[in-house]
Amino acid sequence: MTISLLWSDWLAMFGHFLVLSLLSVGGAITTAPDMHRYLVDGRHWLTDPQFSASVAIAQAAPGPNVLFVALMGWQVGLNAGGPLTGLLGVFIAMLGILLPSTTLTYLAASWGHRNRTLRGVRAFKQGMAPIVIALLISTGYILATGSNYRLADWPLWLAAAATALIVWRSKIHLLYLLGAGAVLGWLGWV
Image (cartoon, rainbow, N blue to C red):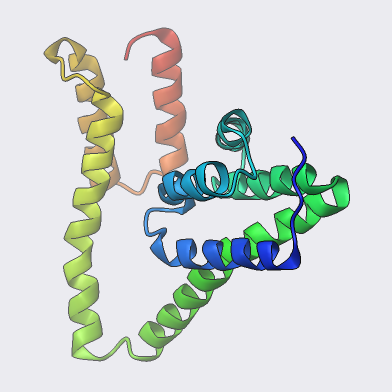
């Protein structure tokens, strides 16, 4: 696939990724449907297989999940002319997706740290703790059950409950528990 991009196109892609950055509360992957709409359906800069491959490769590779954005930028750049424009695509896509959210996070964390003694900041932190715990539990539930809930998976539920109890009541590092879970899964016990 060969496309022709003007500087205004690169700027439009950068602007689109800037906006998506502020919407990516659950991580950049949550904006993938809109990226697909923009890059594949709207601009026709990527094909469906290129888009899917970018997401799949980045998710399978070790490292941050946001790497799929770099691969999409790379693919757009390759389609526009070759390896040098591929690097330009990576730079524009990654800068667009990282700059606003990183800046906002830095400013909010700095403000929160400077004002950590304020009653409102302390109340916010205390109020967010149960929400974060509930979100982690619901994510664990979804990951454990997939699309079906079965009582026959009681060893899995027992391992999850035991892990939650150990995390809550001890200072054992989570990596040891993850390793133990991997061994239990490898043995076929959960």
